[in-house]
Amino acid sequence: MSRPKRIYSTPGDRPATGHHSVFDCHYHLVLVTKYRHKCLTEAMRTRAGEMVRSMLPPMCALEACKGEEDHLRLLLSIPPHIPVSKVVNSLKTVTARLLRKEYAEHLKPFYWKPYLWSRSYFIATTGGAALGVVRRYVESQGSKGVPRRA
Image (cartoon, rainbow, N blue to C red):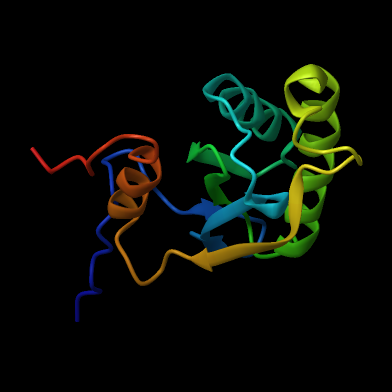
């Protein structure tokens, strides 16, 4: 009896492996600015993506990062043994602190206290949709239309 084959979004996509596990866990994370202020510039969103990529724990990966003036969308790969809530809280804390430091003059009119992100966030597993569809959706943020398949 043959096993069903898994369809991956790109030819290079394969599940990650641990010592005794094989996993393919992807999360769609949305971070919203405090009070939904439209304060994130393109440079800030790009810089936030660089920060996230550099601070993720081993075996975690940032696959896509885009957003608009009031939110940031991230497509993350996080293994099952790492608590997702701890990763999200670390990302929010560090990116807020560093972005407020690097872009202090720009953010001064929006926040008089050391805020950037709302206390809440949205996170969903991408198991219900093909990973390529979610990746295209995240990457289309900030553009007028959703890119169509070729």
